[in-house]
Structure formats: structure tokens, C-alpha cells
Length: 125
Image 1: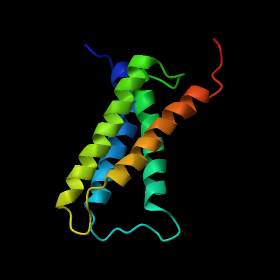
Image 2 (image 1 turned 90 degrees about the horizontal axis):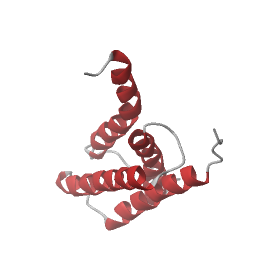
Image 3 (image 1 turned 90 degrees about the vertical axis):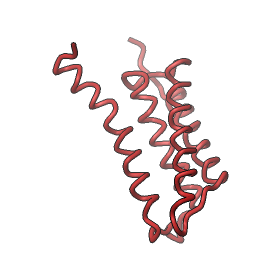
Image 4 (image 1 turned 30 degrees about the horizontal axis):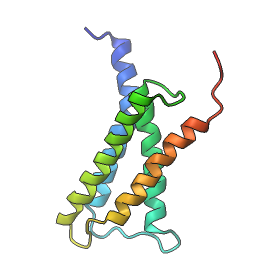
């Protein structure tokens, strides 16, 4: 059975991931939401998915650390799968459409999260 500490740890790892997913679904359902003119839609996608990718990598690794092959692959596929799901889901929202360009920006942001953590100067323990 899970102890209280294990439950708190799981929540702390996965709450940012789930919170991001809920926020994306919430905001992408808002037909009146528009991108501020000073920002590119693609740039916002890339930055959002860079942050989501970092959260997924942390959750799948169990902590912040230099990315390893299996948990990194699972995290990145999870993030990109969610991005594809959200693009498909937007086909049912007025004023929104599914876009391979948006998914491509999500892909770039997600891959950038892996590069960021790969290049981060981790301490040797």
C-alpha cells in the first residue's frame, strides 16, 4: 500500500502535468481567446510545451535529473500525444482549428525541454 509520503510525492510529481493539461483544455475551449498581437501563436505553443515537457520529464523520471532514455521517451511521447489530442479536440470549437503547424511548435517546445535538461549542469553525487 501507498503511505502518506508516497501519495504526497506522486501528487507533487504529477500535479503540474495534470494542471497543465486541464489549463490547456480549458483555454482551448474558449472560442473568444485570442493570441496577443505582440506574440506569435507558434512561439506561445513552443514555450508552453517546453514547460509541459519539463514537467513530464520530471514526473516520468521521479525527480529533476539528466534525462535517461526510457523515461524520457515515455515523457516526450506522452506530451506529444496530448498535444495531438488537443489539436484534434479543437476541431469542435468555433473559431479554432486543428493545425499541424501548432503541433509542430508543440513538438519543438517538447524536444527543447529534453535538450534543456540534457545540457543542464547536473551535480555529480
